[in-house]
Each structure stands twice: as structure tokens, then as C-alpha cells.
Length: 309
Image (cartoon, rainbow, N blue to C red; front, side, top):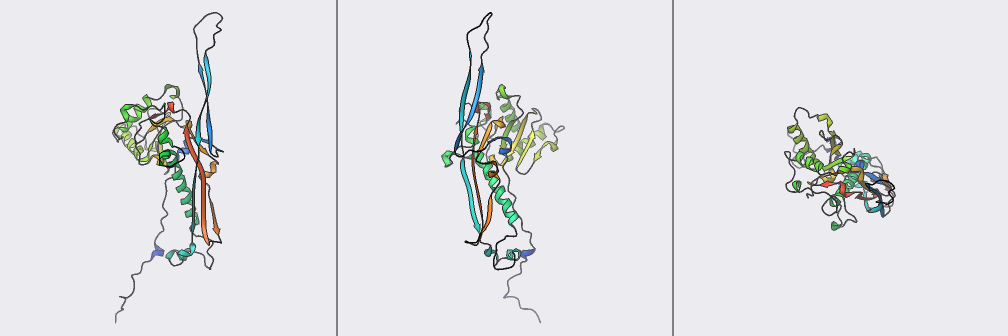
């Protein structure tokens, strides 16, 4: 005698399978920048600069020379939000239902920690992309750093030698050298000088460094925190090379004092905090994330850009 099982579906033990929680790269530009809190809509970045005039003369010099000038660059924040609800009863007919608490009222979600973590990290990733790629031409209320640190802003230095071909693992070091050469001498001694690029181009930079300096390259010098990759430029220790998710898919490279980047928020914790609750009226687990975010650069003339897409 044999079993006749032709009418039955093949068994698939989905419960035994590991549920993979997708890891999302987290933005990091805000870690390098200056954060301005309490921006509800638009506020100025107040700038103060003294132009000292030294004159040659003897005796009683009475003629006055020099200026102390004030200026401002506005920072406008855009409201970014995410709102969604999960009907936990939808899991009852799937294998995930066995992970749910017993009873007719599903007010909790076993994977709530993983769910919350992905919401936060996903929003942080979007924030970093927004800081770099926001564009009023695409509907954003203000521009991001990619638009600001380009030929669209007066004062940004754009060396013609690096505006042509996209950087490769054999040329990216030369691009960095050209950018450093064209950096204003007024900021050359700052400790926050930073070259921002995509993570893909950062890997090209590591390849270039290994090939050019094979016997002195220290792999431990690379800081890899998933959300970004960074290391000190070995030939100019006060310059940090940073690969950020905010520039992923772009060949834009910029160099300047990172603290001159001003990120405006209503409340700093907005970039990582959110609300999650069970709504008995809709019988859903809901979340809401709301933040305000904007960016500008205090002194664009202290920045160098390759102006690439």
C-alpha cells in the first residue's frame, strides 16, 4: 500500500526559516556639521567678518581703514513626515501568526523592536539623502548641499581639471590633491577639513591608496560604521575623507570645513525619535515620524567642488 498525496500541496516549513531584517544604511553628515535647533521655518545664519587694513606710515596716523561687516545666509527647513498603520490581524492567516500573542485583540507586535529600528534608520537614511540632494527644482522647499556646493552658488571654487571625467580608482587621489591645492589658504589649518563623496567613490579611494602606497597603507585607519566610511587623508592629516550614503549614485566630491555646514532642525531628537501606538479605533499599530530639516553653508568661498552630477 502507498500513500496517495497528489492532492496535497508540498509542505513548506516557513516558520523554521530565519526572518531576515533588512539593514538600512544610516546617514551621517549631521555628525560632522553644525546643528542649529529651534528653526520653525526660516532663520538666518549670522556671519561676522573683519577686514583688517594695515597701513604704512610714521607719526600720528589718523586715517581709519578696514571694515567689520555683518552678513547672513538663510536656512529654511522642510517638514518631512511618515505615517502608516499595520493591521496585525493580517498576520493570522500567515506563518507569522504563530509569533503573535494569543487572543482576539492584537495590540502588540512581536517584531516591534525590529520594525521600530527600521523606521528610525530608514528615516535617518532619507534625512542624509535630503541634506545632500534636496532641490527646489524637484519640489523641495529648499536646496541641499549638492546644489549649494556647485556652480549655482557664487564663490564655490570649481577647478576645471576635475570637472570632466568621473573619478576612478586610478584618478581619485589626483582629484583630492587638486581640491586641496585649490582650497583657500585662510582655512588650510582647520581640523575639520572634509572631503565628502559617495561610499562607492570612497572604496575607489581606498583602492587608489592601496595601489599607490602599498607598504604604508593601514587598513585599520578606515572607520567603517555601516552608515558611513571615513579615514584621515594620510598625506594631509587635518583632511578627513568621508563616504556618505547621501551622495550615493553621484560623482560629486566637495572639500571644505565641515563645521561650516549648518543643518537646521526644529528639535535635534526629531532626526531619530518617533511615535508608535496601538489605535483601538482602527485596530492598527501605527507610527508617525515628523521632522523639519534644512541645510546651508556659512562660507561657500571656502569650499571646492568637482561640480559633477
